[in-house]
Image (cartoon, rainbow, N blue to C red; front, top):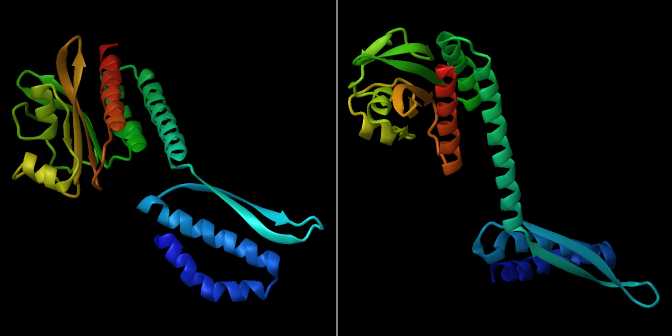
Length: 239
């Protein structure tokens, strides 16, 4: 009803102006107006609308009106966008996997994580740590302050240590989540952190972590991408 109401209100001012330009222009203008109002008010929700307009002619060829057809293509558009997102995720994973496949040593793998993988993911910080008795040893890190320790206890109240200790991913993707999960820990400008266990043959051998300067909203597909990445890092370390 909002679309109808706005149409009636607008027609009182627009129709005279359009008619002054000619009947054809008036019908075409109203068609465009109807398309815009329909898109705005369709079902009370944002919608993707496809439209087509055709003139109605008399036997003599005079334009007497216009026919406008509107179709809700929201679901089709959503499917298309979902497919594009899936292709982007696959391309990103392939890019990271390719870089990891060229690594020959653990240090090479760590450099790939700190340099290439972090860049692809848009992370401000990245680290790869491996277990060393009751500690974790940093193989690489990027974006960390010079105060960062090269070794830290595996029972430390830190995302990387928790992922290693529990064998489960840590998803603290907002400042509120970071504060709740790791009280008293300062992360400087980082407001979202992902930490994943690195598992080889069923044994957690290290952890992989990424920090972001903006809050993140990871969907299931995004989390699957990170899990696949941790698996690829594990395979590279195993090689």
